[in-house]
Length: 367
Image 1 (tube, rainbow, N blue to C red):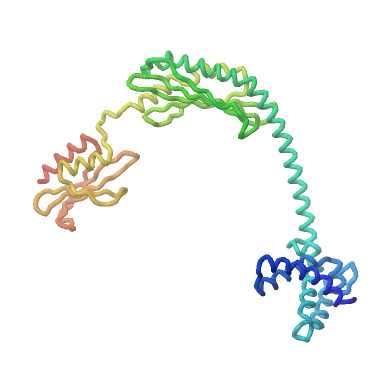
Image 2: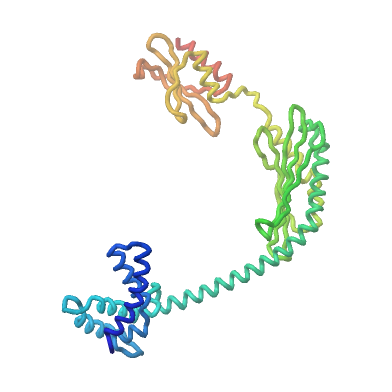
């Protein structure tokens, strides 16, 4: 084996590429050394590794280890050997030990498994494309047939809403309707027809939405999902939603009793009506305490305390509490300076106009 000639053949390619890279990048000495090592790994092949080790297949692990020890003792720089040749011996040992794909970080078994996964992935992608094409054809035909029917049903629905909801919402005129959607731009297996309407009612207007989603799980399995909502006090409230599988049920969309059930609408309108209990917002309640009782406010947004003067250095300490979404105020005691001098019986007051009046009475009793 002409070892010097073999070294020259491999390094010729490495140094040629290295010179071009060096001129373009202005490499440091360390970068040149690292790139040379990488190029050697790329250039190394199983055949060259066998030549360097002077072995013939089939190979045994013990033979590779034994030959590697012999070559290392002969060519190691500490024993007067050549550095570049020792580097080639190390690379050849890696190739023979881990397989021809060592330069890519994989053994033969790993490479075969990777190739198998790639083939499976390509097959899956091909089936996905075929299914997508089938979905597209089915949905295009479906939308062409069903969109006009759904639009017509939605228009009939909004026209019937005036009579259906007139007593509940005091409707004063017909609804204005805008229908959009029905394309396949995002998902070829699904399309949504969306209608937004606005109805004039006493003192303003009410907005609502009707959406019908056509979904193809399989070319023979098409389902329709519907949903209706209304906006009251700037809040969206869902009224009804569900699904059906048969196209002959599209007529149900035009039925206001089905899409906007009367019992559900009455509950929504009742919930949206203003509260007559006199409940106050936190900032309004604090402003009233400060204005009417000369209270001092301290603490954080989640831990609010107020101190109401009682005369002299005495002041009543109260803190804000919330329970199950309802806010109130609890009594902590009487303070003089920063020290509590008197513990009081625990009392709570609503955060409302009535609660404010009760606090007035409580403070007068303490003064």
